[in-house]
Structure formats: C-alpha cells, structure tokens
Length: 145
Image (cartoon, rainbow, N blue to C red; front, top):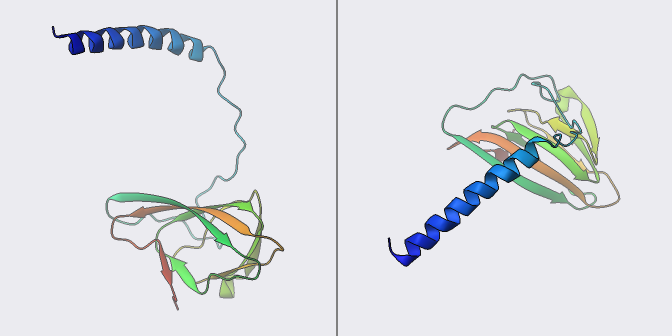
C-alpha cells in the first residue's frame, strides 16, 4: 500500500472507532425539546395542501419588508410554509378576509389564490418562506389577478 493510502486507511479506522464511541454516547442523550410552530394540512384560508407534479424542488428564502411596504398582488403555485421571524405582516386574501401575522407565527400560505401582504408594523418584517415546489413550477407569480 502506498503512503497516502495507508494514511487514509488509518484515518478511516480511527474515525470509525471514534464514531462508535460517539454514537454510543449520543444514544444516551435525550433528543432536544421541540417547540411546535405549525402542524396541519390546510392553508390559512382552509384549502387542502396539494403538491405540484414534477421533480421536487424545495426553496427557502427570507423576505424582508420595510414598514408600509407591500408585496403587491401575487399567488403561490407551490405550497408555502411561512414563519414570521420579526415584525408584523397583514395579508389581504380578498373575499377570504384579512389576517395579521406577528413574530413567532407559522402558517401555510394561501395556495393558487391572489393575495397582497403589507408590513403594518413599525419595523422591518422578516419572513422565512419555505416553498415545497417542483421543477418548472413557479413558487410565486407576481401581478396575478
């Protein structure tokens, strides 16, 4: 065996032995407590979630909005889980009403339904948006009617 391969084999052997010890130690520790943010299968306006056809494509982004800033009319063609990191966001869903979200709120956004969000707070509103989409399917369609 050449020297680089001997070194690699020795490193792998030590890592494997150490991994067994670490694995045994971790197994004795309880899993961290979870704080439930959201659980459900319906959007904020009562629609059942429907996954788009195609190869899965998950996208996560942080949307930051200044006080008074609006998203403009838009819709989501992929299911969207949103988590308010900070601030306040009021979303107008037309005939389905208006809802206001605050830091710590998690929700499934309206799906394929035009809506418009406005930062109605005094500071920046930051939203973690996680789209459970598919290749070739638009996460957000702006200027939607």
